[in-house]
Amino acid sequence: MTSGTAAPSRRRRSVRSRSWPVAVAAGAALLTAALVTPAGGASASDDPSAAALAGIRGSLVAGYDFEHPDPTDAGRERDVGTSGTPLSLVNGGAAMRVRDDADPRRGHVLQTRQVNPDAAGNDDWKAGVYDPDGAASLHAFNGARQATVMGWFRTTGQNPSPNSGSADPSDRYNAIGLAGVLTGDSNGHDVRALLELIDVNGELRLVALGRRVDGSASQTFAADGDWRTHLPDGQWVHLAATFDFDTGAMVLYRNGRALPGSYVRDDDPWALAGEPEPDVASPTDPRGIKIGGSFPQNTREANPCNCRMDDLLFLDRAATAGQVRAEYHRTGGRPAS
Image (cartoon, rainbow, N blue to C red; front, side, top):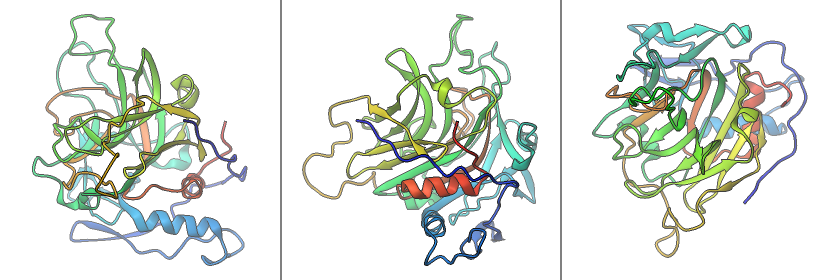
């Protein structure tokens, strides 16, 4: 199955737009800004991009722009979404929040990386949330019918990383972790909705990977082509993955454009056939979020990403093509390469 859309607008932005100011109360970040309007002052009622941004804001469960450190712990990032879910910067703490040298407009971004490829351990820099009883603040993903994971990514080193748990020095991890929402029974690795680079039939591919039912099989939608064409070394790229647990549809986007690709399995791993309808995710609160690798509770290293990341958003709806494109432009998107 393939998908595609028209190319995004070629309008350039001279400065990075941070148009969702937040107010933080009792540890929760709440969106308070009015709708963004483009140059020229169009209102939400007559501007499609403003309406698209409104749709994203209405379904934004958690978001991280790495400009909002916790004032009491710089090793945590405040949530600019509605759930108020603080993000832990694992192993590197505040040092993981860096100013980007490739694109100074981005301000602060998140640095993730493998620290010691020669030793088995759990010292990789990653970010996330983990609660073995389920993260109550992420309840919007409990029984969710849809989901979206999106953000900006730039590779900054060797990917995939050497497998620090292997005695073979030539062994590499079979995946590069980007960002995802965990299942309700996750050990820190299993996911409900994930944006990742993973081995598909012997070839590393950019994928959306989803699991509707906790403990059951996942489905993968893999973008056509070599992953390095989608995420060239050292270049900022906006990626998004949408999931519809009722229809089984997944879509991948790069720089506001849907990517052609195919499903890895041709059976029914999400058990969509038959009643009841509609089909939704398991009625459990996710155990958290993983970013830049697995096991955000820091019990082991797996699939580290030598990367920088920014403007990570987790939605409880499948963003439309227009919404993805609007978010790409809002956060500094340039013409797709």
